[in-house]
Image (cartoon, rainbow, N blue to C red; front, side, top):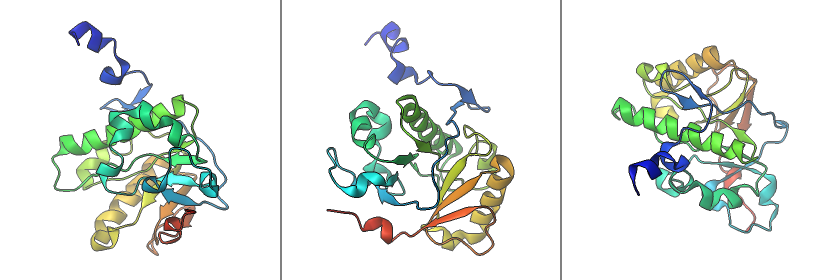
Length: 207
């Protein structure tokens, strides 16, 4: 592929959405869903031609990155499969505190781009919010509209409770989310309109 062809290839340039913040992350538009009966299944439990009641659930990506890298690397390939489901949380690409900052920025950018791409193709998308140490606060909340419904994952957070709560409170201040879908058991000190989703129930899918 020539340089000119690459510049005309939207999947190479990734610059076809409205952006936000210093790093120019694609914006995930605020969308509303009913929050009185949130049910989620893992991306690893989705099917290409799902004929079950699982399609009435949302899909989460609180899983190892290798299970969903394709949603960024080959977004068209999985679009039809994920369009079967009620809504999608954006992919939770890893942000570890011992990652170099450029890798953390990359993970956030990839997640925002996938969410914007899904929305552009008519899917309902709820942004997943994640963060590292305090230096990540300068970018990890960008690309999400204030007042949105957001999602956070609690798996593995109990070993770093203080760091999680610092980031969580920074997220509340920055985004003022209308609701927080909490995948796992929330800490008692977490404020906000929290919608808890049981981790174990999310694994009981129709086979």
